[in-house]
Length: 393
Image 1 (cartoon, rainbow, N blue to C red):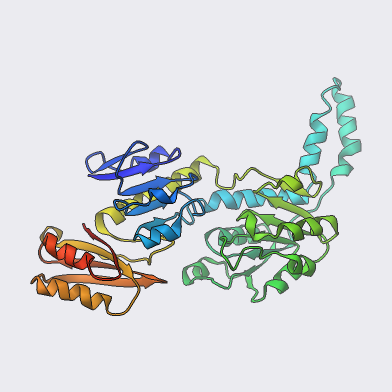
Image 2 (image 1 turned 60 degrees about the vertical axis):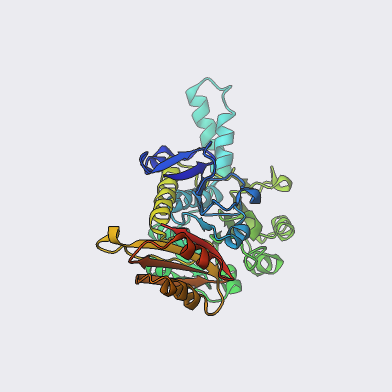
């Protein structure tokens, strides 16, 4: 019986993936093998010897102590792309709100409740509508910074709306490149992109390399009247440089999903309460993806969409009942695999199949064995220097 502790309200469509016969799932579960959460900030003390995995039903993992997990061989999963459509649609909303006088127009119309005559109200609306005149986004240039799951969808959407799209992503993966519409113009220099875009939209994680990426130099390079949209992470935009840009003519509008106290009520700022992924569909998609990844890991040891361990998958043997699988995580140092296989050889245990991959400071192994290893064999592997965790599946 696999035990999974949940935090936050996880969509029932995700929780229903776990069969009652094989899984105990809930907020009160103790000595859990895995944790499933959304925005709950996980304390490092929760990373104990029983824990094998943490799954975040969402893309960001800033609420998970990733390094502590890595040190103890705990795999951290996220669900990239599951909420991409929800964010994409809100980016479209942001583009339109920044281009047209929609918000002030609504505010003006809603304050005219003292006028009871329809004709008088219609006349007033016609007289005042010029105050809320905007511009169309078709024909404008959108610069997309970050061309992953969300950025590629935003680029495709903008092209279909008649915008010119250019993108910047120095870490573009092969899979992401295949998803990218051919009409997107790849820009290799970030300064060139911001200098030639009418709208700029951010779709990057927070890393040391992206923190305060949009700084004073980037704002200085922008053309007058640029609109910046941030539905990624607040820390990507330098706060002091943003305040200066809003006071000048460079930045016409800043649309953000991350309100800042000093910008509340600012005439050039449209703030939303972090609702990019707040749709029923996105929450369901994230919960389903997180649940499926957890089950495949707990039952088979396979890893997909981990932020701290390598992606790795090993098909089960045709006659899976006749073989046993062990999962081993270790520090990524030389001669580890040889030591592990030597232990198995000394115990006269035949290896049927195996796979080994590494990522940064850790490595991960799945090994299918012809017979069940003894407790002493498992302990001998665990006792190898730099082995982090050994699990019999």
